[in-house]
Length: 140
Image (cartoon, rainbow, N blue to C red):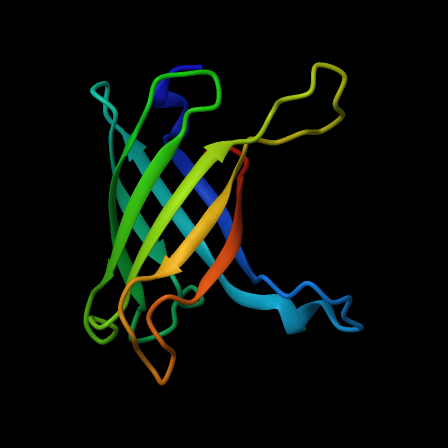
């Protein structure tokens, strides 16, 4: 798979890493957002993670930059830094593209990995981690 395959728009979801079963799946919710990525031929990645709902003002956006490796699972790293009014946000991401099953039905491209809160904000400590999935949208 070529690095350019990462270019697209994804529905991003991250989950707290709690080992105990929960009755309400929302207890695991860390974030839900829109991830837009562009991959350059040299492996550079850039884009944005849009944390707010469409039309919501002010828009809550993190600028994303990183790198991907041209190999079967397309391992990548991203660094996200918030724009005002969320300029204090800084997160680091490490991920891969999940396997595409030859016999899978309606399978989409999925990015998966771990995210780290690199700097404290909104009462949350630096160092908090979560797992993430980003599911590629249609036509993206």
